[in-house]
Length: 399
Image (tube, rainbow, N blue to C red; front, side):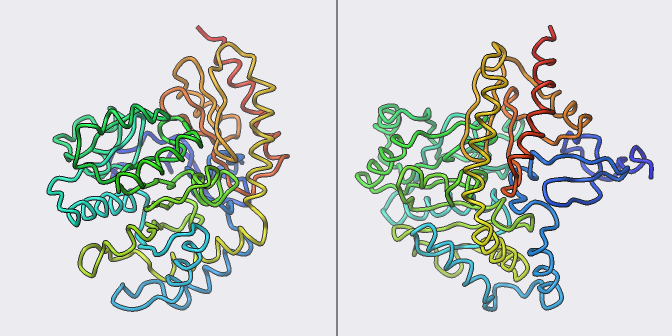
């Protein structure tokens, strides 16, 4: 099959700058294109494919579910929805869950929760604190909470009610909100993904938790990309020993089946009532089965421990190979969520990596983002480094 012919897409909107690859199938941490070329997956479908590709425990479970029922609607109970919600509540030490279809939808729901929480306190125009370099989605509300000007350009006027603050500076947060009595929530990613793999510091998270308690604000955490075991704990904020009031999940929760979730603690658990929010496809039997099976397999195969171990090994190896290079500004992240920041824009490296048989992405212009499946091994990490390091070194030597 001619891949060039296969990649013509005259009927699709021009919304993605796609790489010239058409994937035919995958196994584990490897993918093959329509011409038979193989690729090591250092990208995981943007941190989605928790269990890699065609996992031998997940595939038959999904086949079984498809043979029973895919969709019924939320007019009826879905047993696996309650099962998955109960497990997420237990793992997070929170209370209840709303299921939707994506991270953007989960963040949209979180914003609605914050606004309704504010109205319940008698605030007519609630405000939410968001952060520099944040990315929360592309709907009008989540786009308004997002910081990236390239993503926002051309879609104004934006939704009002957002206050922006810098990361990891509690005094700056207090100053930004000092003259805003209508603040109802602080909303952030524990580790900013699209913003360049930029973490919130553990002490800062504890300070924000204390401030939210003092002010009666909702602490709302976007764990869409950094959650679901990617850092070595179920949720990245757990490294700081805190519990949020609202948490958005998606991506890795169902290993590739579209899903989103909003998990709520006691302060936010009863804000939504029938008619306040909903979704046609959210919580469908197929997605719920995929979520239940993903969590089960992650526990059986100890993938949190694997993410911590292999992620630390990959980061140390990259630091050994690239840390002394003056063109590498920083190597950061946790678990299997690692960013390599270069001193100059490096989008071209994603294309060069494809030619070399490796899938990566570049985010924030100059940050190589590595978010492979959580089944990644040390051998996979060695292979990734062997491919990536020469590409980075050659690129940095170019004028």
